Amino acid sequence: MTKAAVYYFDNNATTRVAPEVIEAMLPFLKEYWGNPSSAYQFGHQVAAHIDEAREKVAALINADPREIIFTSCGTESNNSAIHSALVTHSNKKHVLTTAVEHSATIKFCDFLQRHGYEVTYLPVESDGSLDLHLLEKSIRPDTAIVSVMLANNETGVIFPVEEIAAICRSKGTLFHTDAVQAAGKLKIDVEEMGVDFLSLSAHKLHAPKGIGVLYVKKRTRYHPYVIGGTQERGRRGGTENVANIAAFGRAAELAIGGLQDENARVRGLRDKLEDGILRVIPGTVRNGAKEPRLPNTSNIAFEGVEAEGILLLMDQLGICASSGSACTTGSLDPSHVLLAMGCGAARARGSIRLSLGIYNTKEEVDFVLKHLPGIIEKLRATAPVTAGS
Ligand SMILES: *Cc1c(COP(=O)(O)O)cnc(C)c1O
Image (cartoon, rainbow, N blue to C red; front, side):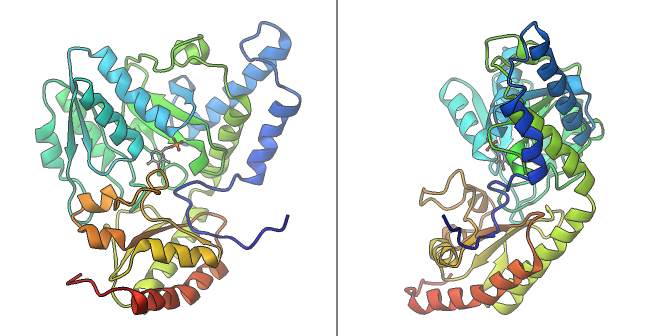
C-alpha cells in the first residue's frame, strides 16, 4: 500500500505517536502481558512499570504520583472530576463552566442539566477571554465545582487558571481544569496553579488514543466514576491499559525534554504560517487573542467562503486541517466556541483551525502558503455573493 504525502496541520485533533513511545509500549504487548493486580511475580513486574509511568506523568505537571489516576481518555477525566464533586458534595447542585469548553465538558454538563442539576455556561469576550469578575460573581453557595479549561482547543486561547483557582479557593468551591491541549505545549505546575482536578489525554502529546489522566489534589475528596475493581487505589475500576500507560509515561518524559526548544520552533512555524496567510490573502482575520495563546494553534476566518470548501480542496492536496473540533465535525453547526466569541454564524462557518506539532517542517508550511491563496481565490470566484459579511 502506498501512502500519499500528508501535510498534517491538525495536531489539536490528535498527534502522531512518537517512535520512542511505540518502543516503550511493545514490551507490554509482547512479553509482559500479565495482569498487574495478580499476586505472582509475572504480575508484580508489570505493576512496577505502571508506577514508573505514573512518576513520569506526575513530573510533567509537578504532581505527586499518588495524585495521578489513569483513565481511558480526556473525556472520562473531565466527566469524572465533575461527577466526583457532585457526589462528594451532594447538597450542592450547581456547576459553573464556560461556553467554550470541549464537548467532553459541555455535553456532560448538558446531561447533568437534564437530570436535575443547574449549570451556568460563562460567556467569553470577542477575543475568547473570560471576565474573571463575572466568574467570581457567578459562584454560588451551592456551586459544587468550577470547570475552566487551561487552553482552548479551537483558538489556543489560554485562560488564567492560577487566578481562577485562587477565586475558587476563596469561595470554598472545587476547581477543575481541562489541560488536555496545554500539556506538552506549556509548563504545567499543579502546585503553582492550585487546582483540585486536572485532565490530560495522551493522544494529544504523541502517545496513543485511549489513555488519559485525572490529577486529584492530595486532600481533595474523590469518588470514582468507573466503579469496579480496586485498581488505581480504588479510584478507577478496570484492568490497567498497561501498554498505553507506559506510552503515556514515555510521552510525558519526551514532552518535558522538548518543552522549551521544540515549542519555540513550533511557535516560529505557526507564526510564519499565520502571518503569511493574513498578509497574502485578503479578507482574513485571526479568531481569538494573539496572546496569551498556545504556540501551535491558529484559527483564521476567511470572508465570503465556507470552511467546508477550503478543507475539501486542501484535502485534495493532502493537507489536514479542521473547522472547529474534530469531535463535532460532521455536524453542519458552526463552532460553538466561535459563536460564543460573537463571531456570527457566517464568519464562524468560514473559519479553519491549523494546529502544528513537533513533526511539522518549514517546507510543509511553505506548501500550505503556496496553495492556500489559490484555493481561497477559486472558492470566492464560484461562491454566491453573501450579503454584508
Ligand atoms: C481532545 C480533547 C479532549 C478529549 O480527550 P479524549 O482523550 O479524546 O477523550 C478534552 N478536552 C480537550 C480540550 C481536548 O482537546
